[in-house]
Length: 132
Image (cartoon, rainbow, N blue to C red; front, side, top):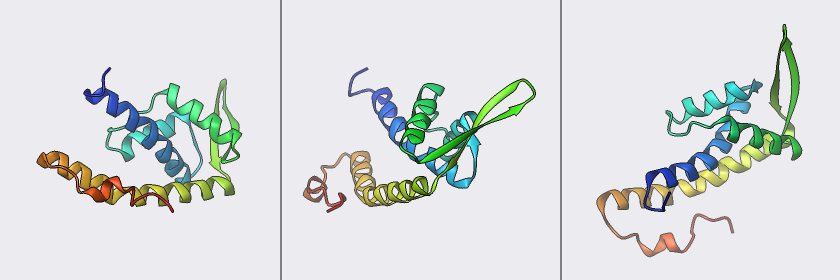
């Protein structure tokens, strides 16, 4: 899978955007892994379809970092972990949202320029969207 393929870029986008949308889904309320994967898929109009191999390691990291807590719910013989944002998780979600909002203008400019086949203005190279 080379840099010139959509699959390469889709994978990169899926990994980073999915993680943010996991937090966004948990901001809506407690959910288990399958619900979270579906929420990410719906929020991104199926642009990102996180697999279990992406969702569960991301959730494990969020638990280890203190961003979410998970409790086991039992429904008959079936068990599933339902996750909820912690106060730190809310802070992380807001921080991530601010970071994404800073990149939007530069991202939109780059996408628009690529669609028109133009070179980007030098301001994109200056990392104007990065936090000081």
